[in-house]
Length: 237
Image (cartoon, rainbow, N blue to C red; front, side, top):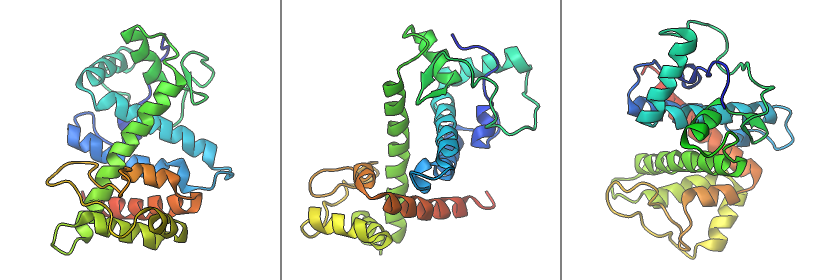
């Protein structure tokens, strides 16, 4: 059973308690790109801290992106803090690192504990299931952001897939080699309209699947460039 006060997921995503669903999604994009562990080398001393922050960002989005989970979370916060947390401390600073219930990815998750217990699946929730949920959340917005980037780079003929591969190939020699080796000529065209995740290569792989197969330095450069673009759009908003 989840114990103690829940983390301030609004502060983790840097949004207000009255944020709309779209504002929550946009905030998740920014926070996930800021904290993603693949932006540093696998042996970097920063990686454990980044991984933990990324997990908290995913917990925040998992909780706040669903109306029922958000309502239950808000109720729990009021039990501990009244109408507002009211603290100015680092939202990523935690009080429950020593709680051994609900360990996932080797780290405690208030959200995973609480909602797993509510659904009757047990306090630990399953580390593998949680990781799959995190991957699905990030891959969803990653494909959305790459599609948006492809459309922004388009020349008006509505070919985001072509632009996506040009961007990806330019970021890394390894990425370019992967594309040349696996895609004979043009990649498959984007499915018409607003369909998310429609950017596919000739073998039917999703953009996120291709991203995961890139070498570490290629992933880091792609995430850093995408973060710079996404965060620059947020300036003044």
